[in-house]
Image 1 (cartoon, helix red, strand yellow):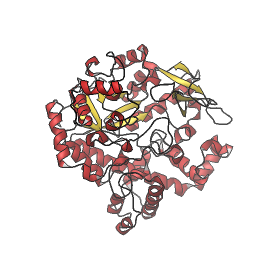
Image 2 (cartoon, helix red, strand yellow):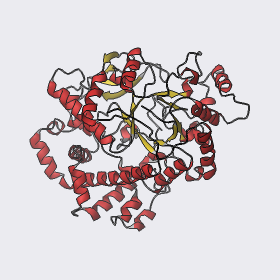
Image 3 (cartoon, one colour):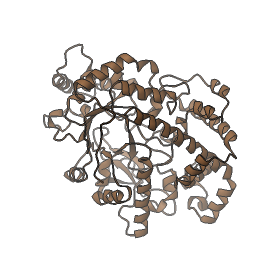
Image 4 (tube, one colour):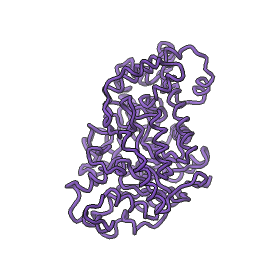
Length: 514
């Protein structure tokens, strides 16, 4: 599927610099695209961009919606340019950190600006807004869900009054009328997000940068998606609680596995109406995403072949069982509706022959992570000399890994593993290990090499984005603008040229047979 050698950088929108406390869709995002182009890169990989919840430590993998955008990414300067905000309001903001997202400060500040912008916008007959609403079938449920969540003090939907939680039509009709103005506000916010996103995506295309999105296979229990499509998930019909939840068995990251808590899909339902509803929802999800990005990485792809089902009452992920997923048939059905499926499969962890066969049948590229390569024998599949195909994407590390520098100096990595990495990279004492790993990734046969931005600058573990199996202090790292200088871009470009990964705008990164 991957047709040309290329390279890119992994960095979430929230990690961008900027004066409003969190990265987003403003000027700094466009400047980062310029940095990528100057550095000879061909792609920018981000994390899921949906609205997040403080309950889940603002994790982008536990979003309130699989379709909506995070309002915190909306650029206030663009709202002022549209005439919806007084520019003077943008100067009166807290002293935000350059290096961390302080959500407790950012959220009320940005929400206040969005409320003021909406007051200026409300009542306007804007054709673009009307077209956006008409072309977004998910929007009505999402806007109502968020309005109800606000009314019930951010409590999860399954704790709402039963008539609302169970979506009795007469009660929903009453709520739509009663909360009409708040529903309109939520739609306006999404209109702002999608409009700004399209401008950034168009700029990426102009600069020859492909945008790689990220889609969690599961959605949060407390989300508009589960509330609006309850029959599609394994829920107790009375309580609304999951009977079984998602996770993974004990692995590299945790001795007790990971219990994520997301409700599982009703893949095994015998009811054809439920199965149709589930497939329709997935088709809408893919269609929406491919209107936002060029390529999609599916997180925990192996769940389509078989998934770890944990009884809802279990405290850990140890006592689960593997259950067959929908397999190739699912993607065949998606292809009939959508056409091309430019997908990267996250195939890390316990991968079976069946998962490998599914990937081969679909032609999706998998992932290789260099940090996993050096603590076992010479047959390790992440060692570059064991790659058997160019149709893969190599990473120095992912958002779930420590930074490469943090990894190398961690006591979790054995002395033998460190020596193996040094020898493999032909590293000499005093060399910068993060550049050793970048060159190692670039030198592989993998069609695409992706490097987290932290590894470009050699940042330590204080700049780690996420630590799996922990629930506090993640997803906060930001990069100050002064680090993204011309000298760094030039150095990265030299390596890109040397390893034949320089990309031209007229090249095609990905080819998919429809």
